Length: 344
Image 1 (cartoon, one colour):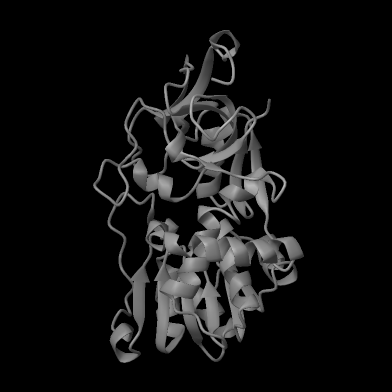
Image 2 (image 1 turned 135 degrees about the vertical axis):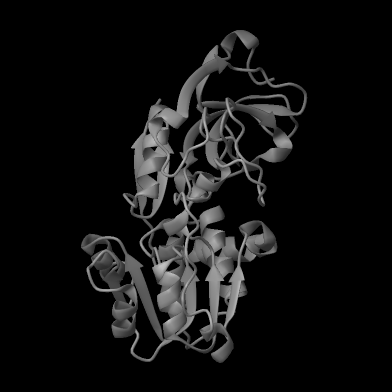
């Protein structure tokens, strides 16, 4: 081990789910609890987390339903992406001071097998970037646009939730890859301005305006769209089906508009257009596209370093702000990636 047991922290705090939310989660569904820190056994590491991620998909894990990823267990630490520094190593190839990416977030300290962590370089990019623009979020945007939606140069692209971590990257990649037009929707006038003035979108609109989404989308895309990257679902998906050109493609990445509904969400009323326009709608899970990771890091990393691809992060500070950050993200309070930074 890199440190003696006497030097290990005695305890750390972690967020637990204590009851299944009904509709919108509330703070009472969670508890921040302290527990002893475990010394690393053979092959394990003890990591002090520096940043952890809160993401829309985590809302689904709070329901006790079978899905592509198991639900959070009640009265157990929750999980999610995190970056931290190794405090103690009992594994070959890792030493105290190494920075690592792993999936034991929502806590101050994590003891876990070395095979479940990946070294990251804090000199190549800010550590928080490995949770967003250069992490799972970024790979979701990259694979969802280029592989799932089969983007090609000259396509007109519409992105919902475009000021979020995934959506903002999708729109910029489309622009860098030669889209004829990039359109985004966001939930405030400030975010709309960000999309057009900072991220290079050709047009954007505030979906919270009184006008229907379909009306605003038709105005922003008078010649229709070829690709729709869906982070929202609901009214946005219905609008996109109306505006998609023949042989258009849809990447269904998220449907945050319905995540907290307590009754079944009505489907788009114009699904018949899928037939008449020969559209393709495909759901995506980022784990199905891990083969693109080296290409993604190489290409997007170069864009980030050159300044061609911009990204934003919204930080909440301290482990105690974890639930506040998560609920704020669900309400759309973040610009770019929502990250909890653990002050030390």
